[in-house]
Image 1 (tube, rainbow, N blue to C red):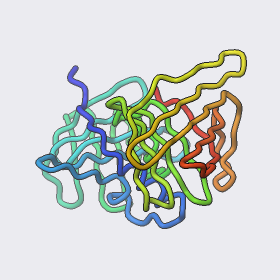
Image 2: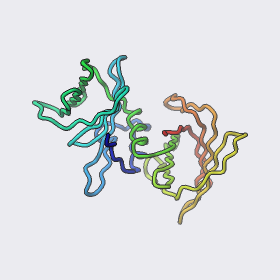
Image 3: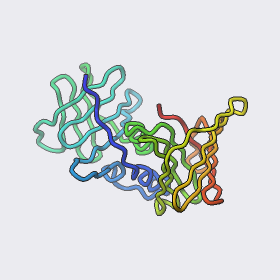
Length: 226
């Protein structure tokens, strides 16, 4: 089966900061990554009550659905309202905040967007290998793809890209250390394999992350995405 093509668009980090700073509004804006000559792909994670969770990824022409146990690509079909995608066996219909899924003979009509999960899943589909977040000031760190390390800080005002260096790994201390520089910045990143809870959202993560940017110290939490 052909797999969906995904492209690095590092404004995903900026979108995450908007959400973390409680300024997120429209789900279509949170994951809109325009690239010249290419229609933007959107990624949304849905929770349908306590029955099923799934991810929709794609543009206006088609959607990939990552469902429990299978992945399908659905072409867009005519609809009286909203947007409808179907292959005859699986149907995904979205109209504003209302979303319906029909698959395997079951209909789920109470599917709501999990905005926070959507941002993390979007980064994963773009090829980000590790992602970390922190607060005061809000920041996001992404390792990969394309051998890049991207830091977005000051609530999206600063967007800094480095070549991704090889890490120094200390298995005894469960740490990975990265050091890089560009024309204006020096960055040191220490990832420690110890449990971490975001001090604003309360979300639990598998790693504690410390970033030193030109001697500015940032602390937060992160996890591997692949």
